[in-house]
Amino acid sequence: MNMKTIGMPIIRVLVVSAGILVMILASVSPSFAGTRWNVGVSGNDDGINGFHLSIGEYYRVPHREVVVVHQRGIPHEELPVVFFIAKRVRAHPDAIARLRLKGMTWMDITLHYGLGPDIYLVPGYSGGKGHHPGLKHRRLSDHDIVSRVNLIFLSGHHRCAPDRIVKYRSQGRSYMVIDRDFTRDRHEPRRHDKALQQKHKKDRDDRSGRRAHRNNDWKNDRKDKKEGPGNRGNKGKQGNNGDRDTRRVKTKIFARTS
Image 1 (cartoon, one colour):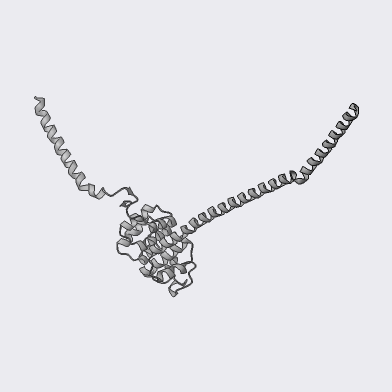
Image 2 (cartoon, rainbow, N blue to C red; image 1 turned 90 degrees about the vertical axis):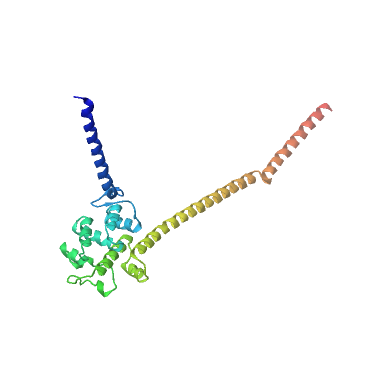
Protein backbone atom coordinates (compact mmCIF):
# COMPACT_ATOMS: atom_id res chain seq x y z
CA MET A 1 0.00 0.00 0.00
CA ASN A 2 1.24 3.45 -0.85
CA MET A 3 2.51 5.32 2.28
CA LYS A 4 1.52 8.58 0.70
CA THR A 5 -2.11 7.42 0.48
CA ILE A 6 -2.09 6.45 4.19
CA GLY A 7 -0.52 9.73 5.34
CA MET A 8 -3.12 12.06 3.79
CA PRO A 9 -6.09 11.03 6.02
CA ILE A 10 -3.90 11.33 9.11
CA ILE A 11 -2.90 14.84 8.15
CA ARG A 12 -6.54 15.80 7.56
CA VAL A 13 -7.49 14.47 11.01
CA LEU A 14 -4.73 16.44 12.66
CA VAL A 15 -5.70 19.64 10.84
CA VAL A 16 -9.38 19.23 11.79
CA SER A 17 -8.44 18.49 15.42
CA ALA A 18 -6.24 21.57 15.57
CA GLY A 19 -9.05 23.71 14.16
CA ILE A 20 -11.52 22.41 16.75
CA LEU A 21 -9.01 23.08 19.54
CA VAL A 22 -8.47 26.65 18.35
CA MET A 23 -12.24 27.25 18.28
CA ILE A 24 -12.64 25.89 21.81
CA LEU A 25 -9.83 28.08 23.16
CA ALA A 26 -11.24 31.13 21.39
CA SER A 27 -14.65 30.57 22.94
CA VAL A 28 -13.42 30.16 26.52
CA SER A 29 -10.45 32.50 26.59
CA PRO A 30 -12.46 35.71 27.21
CA SER A 31 -13.76 34.33 30.48
CA PHE A 32 -10.20 33.72 31.63
CA ALA A 33 -8.58 36.79 30.13
CA GLY A 34 -8.72 38.80 33.33
CA THR A 35 -8.19 35.95 35.77
CA ARG A 36 -4.90 36.07 37.64
CA TRP A 37 -5.75 34.30 40.90
CA ASN A 38 -8.56 32.33 42.49
CA VAL A 39 -10.01 32.37 46.01
CA GLY A 40 -13.29 30.64 45.26
CA VAL A 41 -14.24 33.18 42.62
CA SER A 42 -12.24 34.78 39.84
CA GLY A 43 -10.91 38.30 39.80
CA ASN A 44 -7.95 40.50 38.98
CA ASP A 45 -5.88 43.22 40.59
CA ASP A 46 -8.16 46.06 39.43
CA GLY A 47 -10.07 47.94 42.10
CA ILE A 48 -7.81 47.48 45.13
CA ASN A 49 -8.07 50.63 47.22
CA GLY A 50 -7.47 51.78 50.78
CA PHE A 51 -10.89 50.63 51.97
CA HIS A 52 -10.22 47.09 50.73
CA LEU A 53 -6.82 47.11 52.41
CA SER A 54 -8.31 48.24 55.71
CA ILE A 55 -10.97 45.51 55.60
CA GLY A 56 -8.32 42.90 54.83
CA GLU A 57 -6.12 44.07 57.69
CA TYR A 58 -8.94 44.22 60.23
CA TYR A 59 -10.52 40.84 59.38
CA ARG A 60 -7.16 39.23 58.56
CA VAL A 61 -8.00 38.12 55.06
CA PRO A 62 -6.06 38.66 51.80
CA HIS A 63 -6.78 42.05 50.29
CA ARG A 64 -7.52 40.48 46.91
CA GLU A 65 -10.26 38.40 48.46
CA VAL A 66 -12.03 41.61 49.45
CA VAL A 67 -11.73 42.83 45.86
CA VAL A 68 -13.16 39.56 44.56
CA VAL A 69 -16.23 39.78 46.81
CA HIS A 70 -16.78 43.35 45.64
CA GLN A 71 -16.50 42.31 42.00
CA ARG A 72 -19.14 39.68 42.59
CA GLY A 73 -21.60 42.53 43.17
CA ILE A 74 -21.36 43.43 46.87
CA PRO A 75 -21.26 47.24 47.36
CA HIS A 76 -18.32 48.78 49.18
CA GLU A 77 -20.27 49.74 52.30
CA GLU A 78 -21.57 46.15 52.64
CA LEU A 79 -18.18 44.46 52.34
CA PRO A 80 -17.47 44.69 56.09
CA VAL A 81 -20.78 42.89 56.77
CA VAL A 82 -19.72 39.94 54.59
CA PHE A 83 -16.47 39.48 56.48
CA PHE A 84 -18.03 40.25 59.85
CA ILE A 85 -20.54 37.39 59.50
CA ALA A 86 -17.99 35.08 57.86
CA LYS A 87 -15.64 35.54 60.80
CA ARG A 88 -18.45 34.90 63.29
CA VAL A 89 -19.57 31.63 61.74
CA ARG A 90 -16.16 30.64 60.33
CA ALA A 91 -17.52 30.44 56.81
CA HIS A 92 -15.91 31.44 53.53
CA PRO A 93 -16.83 35.04 52.60
CA ASP A 94 -17.92 33.82 49.16
CA ALA A 95 -20.69 31.74 50.80
CA ILE A 96 -22.01 34.83 52.59
CA ALA A 97 -21.81 36.87 49.39
CA ARG A 98 -23.77 34.22 47.43
CA LEU A 99 -26.64 34.34 49.94
CA ARG A 100 -26.73 38.10 49.72
CA LEU A 101 -26.69 38.08 45.92
CA LYS A 102 -29.62 35.65 45.96
CA GLY A 103 -31.71 38.41 47.50
CA MET A 104 -31.59 37.51 51.20
CA THR A 105 -31.54 40.37 53.67
CA TRP A 106 -28.69 40.70 56.11
CA MET A 107 -31.07 39.82 58.92
CA ASP A 108 -32.14 36.65 57.09
CA ILE A 109 -28.50 35.68 56.59
CA THR A 110 -27.83 36.33 60.27
CA LEU A 111 -30.70 34.07 61.33
CA HIS A 112 -29.72 31.50 58.68
CA TYR A 113 -26.45 30.93 60.53
CA GLY A 114 -28.15 30.79 63.91
CA LEU A 115 -27.01 34.23 65.04
CA GLY A 116 -29.07 36.92 66.71
CA PRO A 117 -29.28 40.67 66.19
CA ASP A 118 -27.36 41.26 69.42
CA ILE A 119 -24.10 40.54 67.56
CA TYR A 120 -24.50 43.98 65.97
CA LEU A 121 -24.25 45.83 69.27
CA VAL A 122 -21.62 48.57 68.84
CA PRO A 123 -19.16 48.55 71.77
CA GLY A 124 -18.53 51.95 73.29
CA TYR A 125 -21.23 53.80 71.38
CA SER A 126 -23.24 56.09 73.63
CA GLY A 127 -25.61 57.81 71.20
CA GLY A 128 -28.73 56.85 69.29
CA LYS A 129 -31.78 55.00 70.55
CA GLY A 130 -31.35 52.43 67.80
CA HIS A 131 -28.07 51.32 69.34
CA HIS A 132 -29.22 50.50 72.86
CA PRO A 133 -28.29 47.03 74.21
CA GLY A 134 -31.80 45.56 73.88
CA LEU A 135 -31.31 44.03 70.42
CA LYS A 136 -31.97 40.40 71.16
CA HIS A 137 -35.54 40.34 69.83
CA ARG A 138 -35.36 43.13 67.27
CA ARG A 139 -35.36 42.70 63.52
CA LEU A 140 -32.80 45.07 62.05
CA SER A 141 -32.98 46.52 58.57
CA ASP A 142 -30.18 46.20 56.04
CA HIS A 143 -29.31 49.87 56.51
CA ASP A 144 -29.10 49.45 60.29
CA ILE A 145 -26.87 46.38 60.06
CA VAL A 146 -24.55 48.02 57.50
CA SER A 147 -24.30 51.10 59.70
CA ARG A 148 -23.55 49.10 62.84
CA VAL A 149 -20.93 46.85 61.24
CA ASN A 150 -19.12 49.79 59.68
CA LEU A 151 -19.07 51.49 63.08
CA ILE A 152 -17.58 48.36 64.62
CA PHE A 153 -15.07 47.96 61.80
CA LEU A 154 -13.87 51.57 61.50
CA SER A 155 -13.73 52.27 65.24
CA GLY A 156 -11.90 49.00 65.85
CA HIS A 157 -9.46 49.34 62.98
CA HIS A 158 -8.58 52.97 63.65
CA ARG A 159 -8.99 52.73 67.44
CA CYS A 160 -11.35 55.65 67.81
CA ALA A 161 -14.70 56.21 69.49
CA PRO A 162 -17.74 55.22 67.37
CA ASP A 163 -19.20 58.67 68.07
CA ARG A 164 -16.53 60.17 65.81
CA ILE A 165 -17.63 57.92 62.94
CA VAL A 166 -21.26 58.98 63.49
CA LYS A 167 -20.20 62.64 63.50
CA TYR A 168 -18.34 62.27 60.21
CA ARG A 169 -21.30 60.43 58.69
CA SER A 170 -23.57 63.32 59.67
CA GLN A 171 -21.25 65.58 57.66
CA GLY A 172 -21.98 63.54 54.54
CA ARG A 173 -18.77 61.51 54.39
CA SER A 174 -18.95 57.96 53.08
CA TYR A 175 -17.37 55.08 54.98
CA MET A 176 -14.62 54.90 52.36
CA VAL A 177 -13.81 58.60 52.79
CA ILE A 178 -13.79 58.27 56.57
CA ASP A 179 -11.37 55.35 56.33
CA ARG A 180 -9.15 57.32 53.95
CA ASP A 181 -9.10 60.36 56.26
CA PHE A 182 -8.27 58.27 59.31
CA THR A 183 -5.46 56.51 57.44
CA ARG A 184 -4.02 59.81 56.25
CA ASP A 185 -4.20 61.38 59.72
CA ARG A 186 -2.55 58.30 61.21
CA HIS A 187 0.44 58.62 58.88
CA GLU A 188 0.81 62.40 59.20
CA PRO A 189 2.11 62.32 62.82
CA ARG A 190 4.78 59.83 61.79
CA ARG A 191 6.17 62.24 59.21
CA HIS A 192 5.90 65.07 61.78
CA ASP A 193 7.69 62.99 64.42
CA LYS A 194 10.43 62.16 61.94
CA ALA A 195 10.94 65.86 61.21
CA LEU A 196 11.05 66.61 64.95
CA GLN A 197 13.62 63.87 65.48
CA GLN A 198 15.79 65.34 62.76
CA LYS A 199 15.42 68.81 64.33
CA HIS A 200 16.32 67.49 67.80
CA LYS A 201 19.36 65.73 66.34
CA LYS A 202 20.48 68.96 64.68
CA ASP A 203 20.00 70.85 67.96
CA ARG A 204 22.04 68.24 69.82
CA ASP A 205 24.80 68.50 67.22
CA ASP A 206 24.76 72.28 67.52
CA ARG A 207 24.96 72.09 71.31
CA SER A 208 27.81 69.59 71.09
CA GLY A 209 29.62 71.90 68.67
CA ARG A 210 29.18 74.91 70.97
CA ARG A 211 30.33 72.87 73.96
CA ALA A 212 33.43 71.72 72.11
CA HIS A 213 34.13 75.31 71.07
CA ARG A 214 33.86 76.52 74.70
CA ASN A 215 36.20 73.74 75.84
CA ASN A 216 38.75 74.77 73.25
CA ASP A 217 38.48 78.41 74.35
CA TRP A 218 38.96 77.39 77.99
CA LYS A 219 42.06 75.35 77.11
CA ASN A 220 43.47 78.24 75.11
CA ASP A 221 42.84 80.65 78.03
CA ARG A 222 44.72 78.37 80.41
CA LYS A 223 47.59 78.13 77.97
CA ASP A 224 47.70 81.90 77.63
CA LYS A 225 47.75 82.32 81.42
CA LYS A 226 50.69 79.94 81.73
CA GLU A 227 52.57 81.95 79.14
CA GLY A 228 51.33 85.29 80.45
CA PRO A 229 53.11 88.30 82.01
CA GLY A 230 53.85 86.49 85.28
CA ASN A 231 55.77 83.80 83.52
CA ARG A 232 57.49 86.36 81.43
CA GLY A 233 58.40 88.05 84.71
CA ASN A 234 60.03 84.90 85.95
CA LYS A 235 61.96 84.71 82.76
CA GLY A 236 62.92 88.34 83.35
CA LYS A 237 64.05 87.53 86.86
CA GLN A 238 66.15 84.72 85.56
CA GLY A 239 67.55 87.13 83.02
CA ASN A 240 68.49 89.65 85.75
CA ASN A 241 70.24 86.95 87.75
CA GLY A 242 72.17 86.02 84.63
CA ASP A 243 73.21 89.65 84.15
CA ARG A 244 74.47 89.88 87.74
CA ASP A 245 76.46 86.67 87.32
CA THR A 246 77.98 88.05 84.15
CA ARG A 247 78.99 91.29 85.93
CA ARG A 248 80.60 89.28 88.74
CA VAL A 249 82.68 87.26 86.29
CA LYS A 250 83.78 90.41 84.51
CA THR A 251 84.75 92.00 87.86
CA LYS A 252 86.87 89.02 88.80
CA ILE A 253 88.61 89.00 85.45
CA PHE A 254 89.28 92.74 85.72
CA ALA A 255 90.72 92.34 89.27
CA ARG A 256 93.08 89.58 88.12
CA THR A 257 94.37 91.53 85.19
CA SER A 258 94.90 94.63 87.24
